[in-house]
View: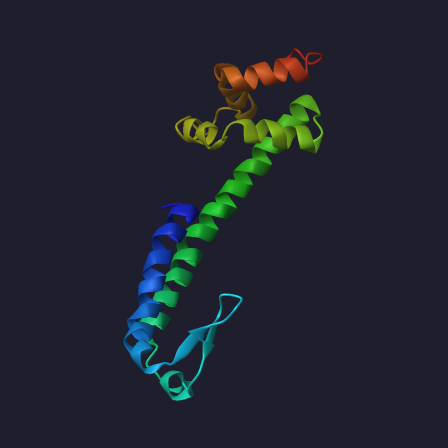
Amino acid sequence: MSYEEFGIVRIEDYQKKLESYSYPIQEFIEWKTTQDNNVEVLNETIDYYRYFDATPQAEFLFECVDHTITSIIPEEVSYLQKYDKMKAWLDDTFEMPDNMIALLMNMRTFETFYEEIERIPPDLDVGETFRGLIWEDRLLSDFIKRNLSNNTDL
């Protein structure tokens, strides 16, 4: 599950965890809407929140932190390592400025390149593999031909 998917799915769970405590005590809280569409609490509510059992909320937070540490961070590190490797190869091959490399990399996800590369035996040259994959990708090869026409040895 991607970071975005995890966040979207979990935000609803988070809301339910918060409401599991706050919703039942709403009937005991006196409040009114302010002119700036905020809420003004009219009675003392500190005792409702001072010593409540926050175990479900803490467990939810732990699950989120655990998922971040075990999944999201390793995926992000892997992505950045792949990005750096691809960027270094493009820079070595074409001597591109960083902004052009970023534009090229954003035109199409290079994760598909790594999916292909992972199926290729490790004794093959990464540069040769990238070269073949780029020429198979019409969008990338057209971009390179238009912007780097002086380097035709790819």
